[in-house]
Length: 314
Image 1 (cartoon, rainbow, N blue to C red):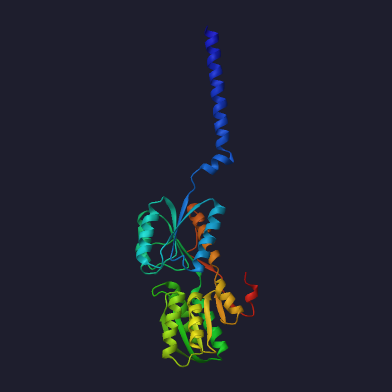
Image 2: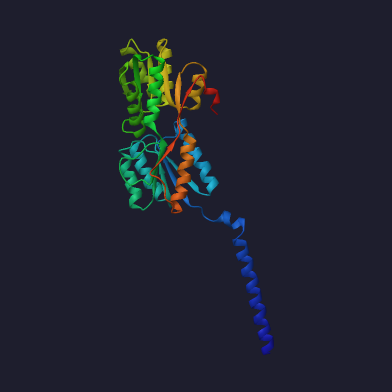
C-alpha cells in the first residue's frame, strides 16, 4: 500500500509540474501579453476643433500604439476651466504621465500642480506652462517662427508698408512668442504695424476681427496671422471686402493653408510638424517612465512654405 501511495503522490506531483509549466509557458507567449493592462498616458489637448491639434493627437496616438501605451485623450475646447476639470478627470483614470497642450500658459499652472501633487510627471506640448513642475517642453521655436514670417514680409514689401497682426489666444506662450519674433523682424524697417488684435487662433474670429480692421484701415499691405486658421479667416474677410493686393502670411502649414498658397490666395506659412510634436511627446514620456534623463526643452524644426516649395509638402 505504501508503494501505491508513493506512486499516486508522484503522479500528482508530476501532473502539477506539467500543468504549472504549461501555464507559465502560456504566460510568456504573445496572447496573454495582449491581455495585460497597458500603461496609460494622458493627453489633455487645447482643442480638437483645429486641424493642427488633431494632427498632433494623431501623431501621439500612432507612437503610443507603436510603444504599447494606452493614450487617453480629453479635449479642453479652448477653455481653461474645462482644461482644469479634464486634468482632474484624467488623473482619476490611472495615468502614469500627463501630456498637456495648454489653452493658456498662465492658467494651466494650476492644472500642472494637480498632477505634481499626484506625483504624475508632466510634459507640455506646443505651448508652455508658466507654473508647476514640467519635466520637458516639446515645441517649435515660436520666436524664430514669428521672426521667419516677419522677415518674409519685410522682404516682400522691400522694407516699407502697413501691416496687420492677428494674435492668438492672449496668454498662450505660442501667441506671445510668435508676436515677439514678428515684431523683432520688422523693427528698424519702415514697416508700420497699424493694427494688432487677438482672434484666438480661430478662423471665424479671424474673419470678424479682420473685417473690423479693414473698415478702420484704408491702407493695408500685409497681414501676419499667428496661425493658419486666422489667416484663412482674414482671407475670407479681404475677399468679401473686395480689397486687392493684401499679402497674407500664416503659421502652421495646415492642409487648407497649403491649398490657399497653391491657389495664390495666401503668400506663405511657417510649417510646424504637429504630428512630430505629438509623437515626440509619447516618445519622451516613454523615456521618463523608464527613468531616463531628458532635456528640459525639445525643439521641433520649422520651415517657411511659399508657392516656390509648397509642392514639396506632404
